[in-house]
Amino acid sequence: STPSFDHLRLLPSRRSPSPTVVFELSQGSTNYTATMSSMMQGPEFQHILRILNTNVEGKRNVVFALTKIKGLGRRFADLICKKAEIDVNKRAGELTADEIEKLVAIIQNPRQFKIPLWFLNRQKDWKTGKYSQVFAQNFDAKLREDVERMKKIRAHRGLRHWWGVRVRGQHTCSTGRRRN
Image (cartoon, rainbow, N blue to C red; front, top):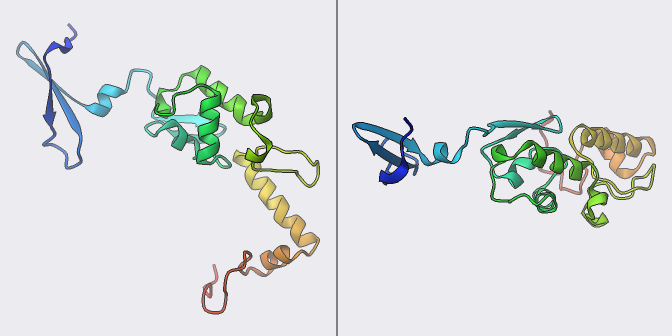
């Protein structure tokens, strides 16, 4: 028989040093103890999700879990959650398959969901002239391609990359002496 939650009472946790909330349920002579996190996780909870070839931690908030995907920051993750009508306070492991499909569709085609051009991370690509959102494996490939292009045309940044010195205007007299 399943226990009813009529006699639920809140107890401070003595077992773990972290501030975990513990519930104790007594039904007849049987006592049940559960932490708040195990009570929150349903049977469909996924601890690790696979989204766009990236492992996403299920225990984290949806917005912060999506930032594990390369090319997605906190603001963009927040925006796509709002466009997909997903509660931003929800855990990533609680997402349904339909919600994950919605998120992936928005990430892959942000312009179709009326995300403004200035929000995208690849603005006016030098080959195509198009605006797009670059993520996951494409992110590394585009970055490598850009650096190779700068080296090829012998731009200042490309030369700094070639020489293996600081690129973004940092001081180099007394710092950055150790070579990898």
